[in-house]
Length: 415
Image (tube, rainbow, N blue to C red):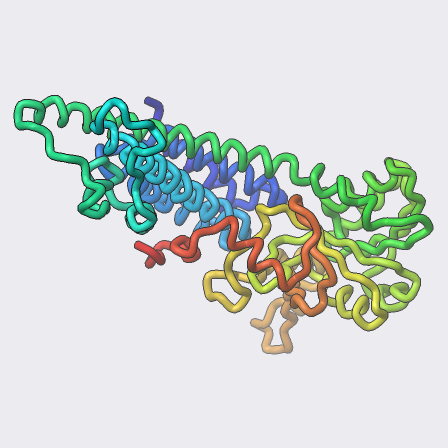
């Protein structure tokens, strides 16, 4: 079996060097690496889910530490941990249901199948609580009430029963790994198609003769606007250039190439132009549990301008950008300081940047992200539909387990 560590090391190197552009590409590659880790993980006879969780968590902590600013990495690690727990719980529930049927199989032959005793809700709840304990038949029987226990077999059948249990453990481990890999494949597919699913909703939000404002470059925004154009919607787009990287220039060029009317404006012109705008549509770097948005720098200014002129502020975000953490969480690094060379020419300002002369020195701060509080957001559009900011925490709860909200190198919740 090939070693997965070279694959992990290669991805770690890319994260550390910031070689991967965009949350979607980062999330997809993270899921693919974790899928390889799961597929090549050898499971013990007991506690198969715990072994998978430990393996994913160990690799996940390395990936998160490599680039803490790319929140999508932590999101996918937590999503995969949640998948493992959910699949293990599903198998445990199925095993209990099977035991309930076999417990009544020793009744008289003339008893109908519907009359066989089934396990109580207490037994099912006990199995759910012990999901991460050794998921063997013996463990499941220990959690059942005495009235539902399977009768003891004779000593002559002990050896064959032991072999049967061992085979069941191995079969269940293979089934768990298979189900988890299939679920991760579905996750990768969802990440790949989130743009199309969000774009399908464009016709419901963009109407004729509207003026849309956006900032920077976002593939999700590009596909959303082009989908409205394909539905015969006629509208104009103001693109804020997004200095100092000027990603808005790239978006405006792409929009014009696909037949849309695009107008580039400077960042400082947002308040001057916002009164002509019907709607602001932007992408996001991450959506926090409180409905706040970590987005490209400059978007908080746009959101404030939109609020001042009562313009709807709409955020497009795939489900892989939904983060279960809050912005005040110490594990969330809200900003990344980029190279000063994006702002100033070192040759021209070398005298000012050198403080050794004793004169005043010039410092350059080039943050990459803004934080937009939920009170400034009108609507989120995800691949599952449109949601208010106050609903985001409930949507996020469907994707993550409480035990996995903290994944880091020093301590881990639920461990």
